[in-house]
Length: 293
Image 1 (cartoon, rainbow, N blue to C red):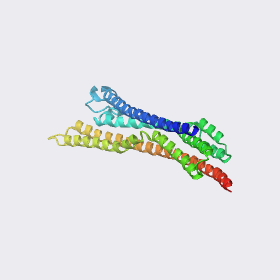
Image 2: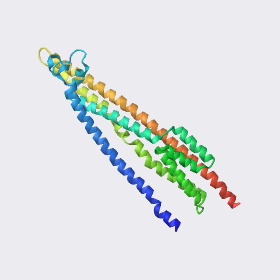
Image 3: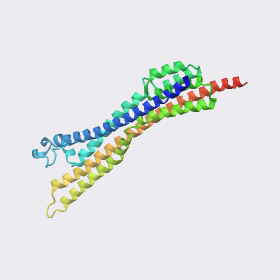
Image 4: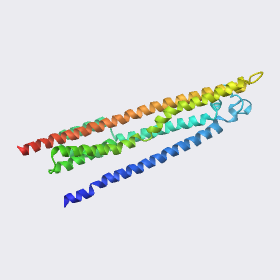
């Protein structure tokens, strides 16, 4: 009767976790869309009313050259590509802050290295209760995976109907499934950052092309070239190049940084999971051999 109840209730946590993960994914997608839209609106407002303010230009007209040393007016002369590049820059900054907070929360309340060391020490003394208490104290994604493995450890330790190797495989499967539920949360929005790293330079180059077209069009005029149009075209080309390269560089640095942090968390999970499996195999493998003898 107890086995039947266990079979009826065991799928519920996994189903609940899958449902929660799906809801989290939908929430993250909505968050990403809202960030992009709000960043674009803010960029357009800043471009029109801050960078394009008449006080930054000679004669109080934003169609003229910027005042000497007024870099806000210089950026405005980058043209209509500037708000797009500003949107990308704001998105990189926002998603980087969001990823930093998420990964920091996933680590838990203290150092990951110290937590894994504590788990290994508890396992070496076969103190599973103490290891579970350490997980509750640590919290975060790594602690969640380790706790799931430890709970399965206790369950398999009480189950004498299965061979040791099958029980070890069950623990390993539980750790892998818990990891598969936790990792997507850590990797969300990294695709957006990597995409921005690739296209920011291209968008900047597109603005550069438009600026050079404008500059050469000014030179191609009959008679005296339009010096103002020529200067505006060159400014548009240089400003877009600078914004595109800067945004791309920041996105690349952020992506590589967060990828390395996620790899660190994954390695910690693997290390703790290996310790759990090895401890179970040594403890219960020896007891099974003793019973057989």
